[in-house]
Image 1 (cartoon, rainbow, N blue to C red):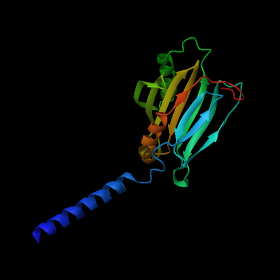
Image 2 (image 1 turned 30 degrees about the vertical axis):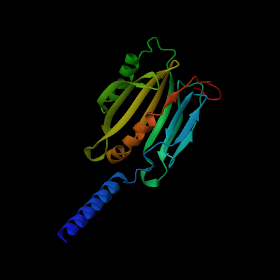
Image 3 (image 1 turned 180 degrees about the horizontal axis):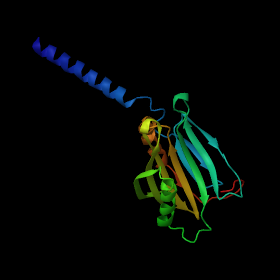
Image 4 (image 1 turned 90 degrees about the vertical axis):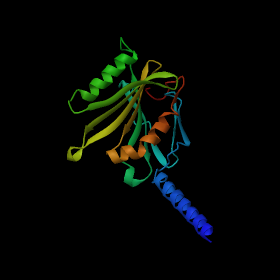
Length: 199
């Protein structure tokens, strides 16, 4: 009799543990795994994004500008729609020094030049077989909060492909950073056609 009670107790505890673990892992991730593909052959990029996100394509296409927005991704729910994962393309072919070190110095200067941005980490990483710099920094928010931002600068084809994670607060940063890193891990750059869009 006692052994049956002990066994039932163990089963109940196990089920409670599994329930808590399951609830903890399913806290409205809005598509933790990127399972849909975005491809822009003109700019030579592809990236996967969660199926319950949406994207806005070709936000800017001005041949007179050295920088163009390619696409922005957002969770397809109103509560979290203020976060954005964007991809930009900067033409750096005219620069005398197109090394990663030079791009890193320029991007870090852009972040800190106003005196408001503070760089938390900056490290060289490979992205899709290309040199890249991953920069995590903070900017002032409301109530003296400093909001985390993420920028990844990838060098390929005499251009700088910039991936930006721009949440509106640190709770959203924490909630979506794993999803964003999963998206970045699928980022690929192929030979661009540079047609129809000023890449």
